[in-house]
Image (cartoon, rainbow, N blue to C red):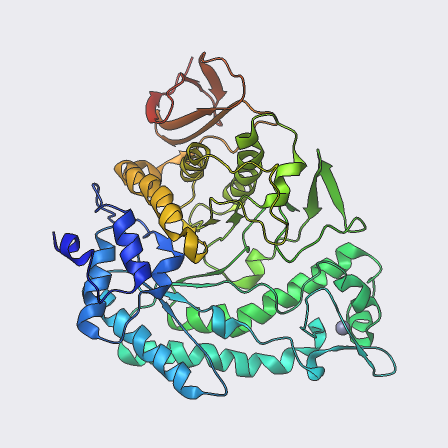
Length: 473
Ligand SMILES: [Zn+2]
């Protein structure tokens, strides 16, 4: 196979060689399933077209997509131009090979907040600083002038793709610390701002503030990002980090977020669950992108003796929340990660790293609850291990492509204590099941009551999936 000799090709960038070294060619064809999306595969673009083709082909033997980057630089338009040229060259090759054209649009999504013009101002016209997002001055109601220039950034690339006659299949952003947000002490600043008070008469209610801010945030990203892409490519998957349908609660805190006790919340042990507005429908996004990470602070939220279950409990809750509330026709593509994420928390020796086994079981449970593929985020020094762990599960899951494509999840339940976790996809009278036991669980059979009637008896089968028949009696 060509990929074997390509593996050590010195013309390939290091991230590509790491992916090839850490993975094996697929045993089961990817078919129509989404490719595996890996952070290092965003560093797989080169200027030489023949080399680019060999990179795309080699990664495709692993089911991994090459992801182009759209860059925007007002000061140096050659940066923008060069990113477009490379992206189009990759897209032409992907088109010829019948592979999805994938893009990281993060760079063009930033730029709503930042200047005096977009800052909150009090009744006297003085700037009100909002320290909730460092160095970003912004009022949700003073950013409309940014829409047109930001939309132009998107149409610059989309129009070029159209003119070149290439498809556009997957576009994502990692847009987070820009634009209207209700986090940290943003509410304090907004309450001092004349425009915010005028637009949100009930601003003393956090719920009213959150709804107004999230509505504006969704509008900004829809008008400048998702709409121009979808107008040209109606079938494209377009989405953004951490935007996904949910049950009205958020079970995790991002690295730039602090827990504010005066924001509506409930506690699950020591885990703050914040009331959250479901902005996904307002964004126009066509896929869901939950964030399933072992954040360091999660560790102290729970007191389970089985440390693995502290991680898995929270991560599976986040993933299941998205799965249970996303239309089955909308793909779920979670950001995943294995190493403990210490940002912003200090490295704490009492925190135990999630085991490889627990992480890989988590990945199986996400797939068997309806997640479509994975997007790996990781640091450079983590590439080898993160790629190897994730690819192994994803590649093995392709054996069950029929179930993953057509099966209906049987449960989104996450046990409140370490115990037996079951996930499954049902096709008619049969279910593809994964069972993982945590804590001191006995190995006896478990019975799951299925929606729409019937039960399923699930024996222990560590480390593998089983196909079981539904009991109708
Ligand atoms: Zn304001």
